[in-house]
Image 1 (tube, one colour):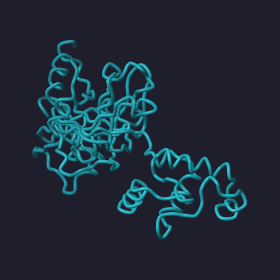
Image 2 (tube, rainbow, N blue to C red):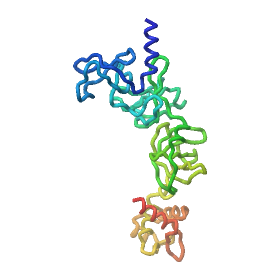
Image 3 (cartoon, helix red, strand yellow):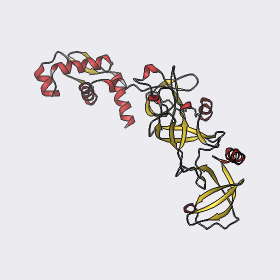
Image 4 (cartoon, rainbow, N blue to C red):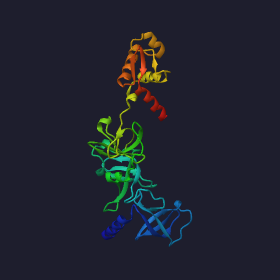
Length: 310
């Protein structure tokens, strides 16, 4: 019996997670049975448009389903042995790892906790995504094999246009003490220094990051912190919008204006107005002179960038 089990495990190591060919040997109402290297795999009849004859050849993706039954499918996922693709995390299980949907109808692939961050708070959560391939252990079990840094560098695409201050959608693929390594939806590599975030992203977390610049090797230098104008108060944003829409880029108000005039025009108190002016001046988006508040070149450029991105 042990010899049969060892034979089965050895065969599974060479078959699971791969495209394999076999022969149709039997069927019932719902399934065909396909023999591959002495092992029988189930094939869902719902996949097959034309009936298969006994003795005919069939090629498909071999795996073990959630009921621990050997199954073969024509709908092969991208994630295979030595073939990497993105999968979506469906759940985490303490003491085991995370389950990833790679496109199989009745099987999620587990990424072992041994391959995940030591801190459980940095584990991927439902909806996060991981790039992985399939690996088979000595017992013939399928596991997720996370892509390493070398693979990400191999698939990375160069940045062909200036992206400074643009937003990019990225996925965290490696967490380091020095910072977070990410890849964009366009397969451009990026790096987020700890000073450019409020908290460390999870492995597999998807985020919108702002491009600060590029490193010499082409990696995008990214930030998760809000832009200066996004970080200022609502009152300051309202005041900035007023300046941006003023015909000459200035208005006849300063922190010396009367509380009544400020309240009548802006609907806020003089204290709120002074704080808003202070925010704009600190960000160099506005300045006061000649008894008026003026939009600076930086404030005008911010207006143009906002218009270009809308």
